[in-house]
Image (cartoon, rainbow, N blue to C red; front, side):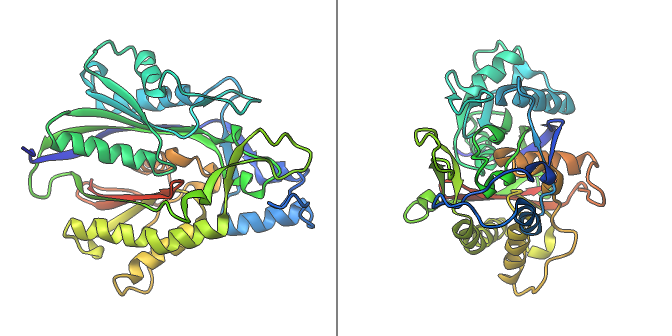
Length: 360
């Protein structure tokens, strides 16, 4: 029997590494195409064009001796404190990542035991009924973890969950690839709790998720370095940028609309959209296309908070980090208020898309 429950965010936290890597730090870098040919432009020209398209001016890298688990623990501890929660009462720890713990100067991933289990231990949780597990779902992993927590609540199988997204992408990038400048490190976390459903109450209103795995499967995947004479056995994260852009522009607005329509809401009800910080130009185009599905030519100017300019793309961490920053007043001219309807949305490797309609 499905319970009438509403999934509510009661605490948020994030960990932003302190190491700022500016675009100018790549000026001495050689860049190659996917055919192994050196790109015939000066690095300054490549970097300028990169900034114009992505909106990224700088990104954050974790300290050399810090891993994804440790960032997750820091974000989780903040969220737990913010919620005023006894961590022993958690039913689940759902941790989204894609590469596990990657040591500095290596490309080897360590995900055994699971990162969620390590977070549970680091938080000192002894309760054996608190079940930790990882989820690999590309950049939409944190939102998918949130969707799973909501499903467990509605099934009556849990009441309190910690949902975390953490990644050290700086350790799986090919520095000879222009796209390497997109990626960054970070962690974000929320505490979600189940409450009795009441009309107009805070919580998840509706969700949607989609997966495209035919010709789209390898739009984001692992591959060898673009630079010649590098070890072909070492794999790095690779992205077919144009195909990802076209895919996202077509399918993400549709998934967002499906989510909003499932909640029986009007687009005018939406106050903020927290979209995966992948690429500023792409995100703006997605939001514009979303509004055009409702016959609205332009989206409201303040509908989409962003932190990609300073933080880059930290994969599963972008959405929870962005929400935490806005919720706590850390992004200028962006706030959320009780009763606001907001959308979370993401797209990434898989190729996966998802969205959550949520009332603050």
